[in-house]
Length: 295
Image (tube, rainbow, N blue to C red):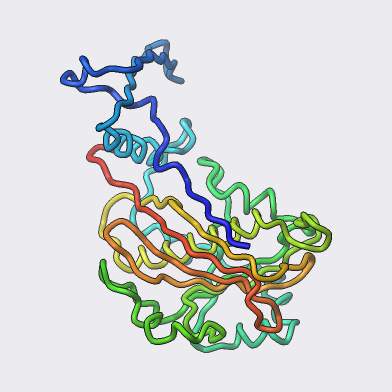
């Protein structure tokens, strides 16, 4: 079975103030009044949507999402935030012990080409609500009790428009761990079942989404320039289900960057069982939101 999911390019934002030269082209107009936490002052915003002006929506939506955080505490994160995160957090000892106790996952941990890193989505950011789903909702003994991420030590980020050299040389060796730039070991619990003893297909998409997110964050960290943190969104994802992912079970999720083009990132990944069999595969395109002066 092959399923393709595509997110809406951008959502309409209430923060779009139409320019004067568009006033005659207005199709819909809404006055939205919001009350600030500091007083009784009002803000008035206008919004318009018209064919031929979709790029205005795209720019505004990206700006809106740039501050999709708590109104109480909009902490401005810098582009090198991942370095601080990795230094401040370590994988839990119980998780390391769990995967060290299994022969096939222990071999992955002992691979000198990789090193352990904290799985970003597992750490909730309280003042913004970021990562709450993986940090809380599925952080239980019966959902996903253990996640351990590893990254390739010599992770190389390709220039825009160039395919990853490692991927080019190993396209036919899908069973070879060497082409994986990020590896995630996951323990999947019984509460993830849809059909009896089978992990829900939608949750498998979530697994890919979070693993690929870590992959892109690591690559972005290689090439980031001083400034605010870049925000990335999933644009499309195509998933092929080849065999059931059993619940409960332990699986390996591997992913790699195929290429990047401007603000677009193209990734691939697989979910693999203890026998090395590919159960599910995915291809995804991510987009980095545009930066705005003063945002």
